[in-house]
Length: 413
Image 1: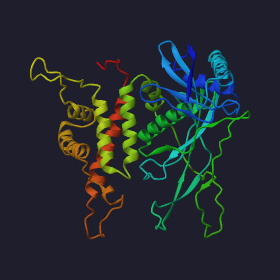
Image 2: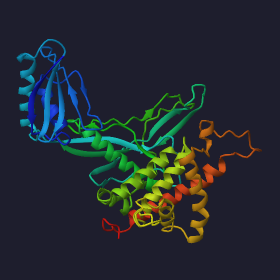
Image 3: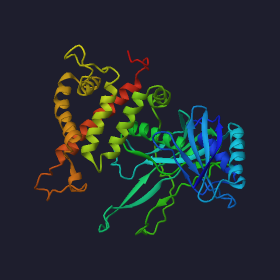
Image 4: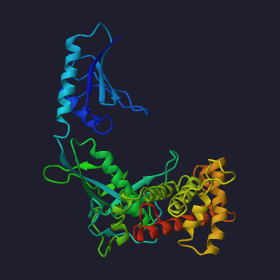
């Protein structure tokens, strides 16, 4: 094996490395057969060989104080101009291309109520077209039907779920489609978290982000999904919106939340934890409770700062303030009596799950109730339906309240 350093290039490893690699691939004949990502310490990245068979060497890219350091590596023989020079030329050309290929990429995706969600209090209907942050939301215009089977292969149970999906449109300014996807997915996740918080039902992205074509959206909304069954009356499912279907609109706190979350990482983290807790609820109720508590603690962080231990003047340990934050956040939506009744038992269960791995819900029997019949008490009902259900409602109220209030200063004072 041989190595040949071809120089250092003024390219920011983290900020512009991906774009530089994209342009390098084009310069080397259209791409690479393999590319490995950087490790947790920031390097190296390996690219190659190029799709052009004339070059069999690879390029190893290390972070450098002046940008990136590039080394050509070959398997056999010694360095030769035909294996080294194309990399040097391509690296220089790719550096010169950075920032000159920016364009607006418009994308569409579908979001909707998760088929696993239990229908909540709010009636379903079509959303009124609106903007949330950088995203445009529009009704899908389809009453979508889905057939869903059970997870177990021995189950013959099929459920039918109907929903009114929403078309989401966004745009990203960048050099190629590939960097658009992670940005769009992050935006879709935040949107679904806000919709879940508002509607008290689990909302999820139902498609990947799709690039718009020259004539606009290419997103297709199916009228029916899954293994279809013929109707006993012979009607064909058309996906038409039923007469009398209502429209719903988003409240002002949702419309203003995007900018608020952009400037408040703690609140963004708390919302994300709430969303994960809702997603965990069906399969992992014990972890769901733990995560709801974490979301509430995240709101409490805003008014209960870290505190150093005062056992002696030189102690550098921090005091445990997590439960204090939990109770402080609860007080924003509950009376002192309600906090006292709720906080102790829930926090104890959270601690048992977080520190011992104790499970309180039906995940112990693979998510199924496990009770023998109507004359026996379901051992998981109290935990899942009563305690977890109450905590989910309170976590929702805590987050809605803070998102509905005027923004505070970054120090939350």
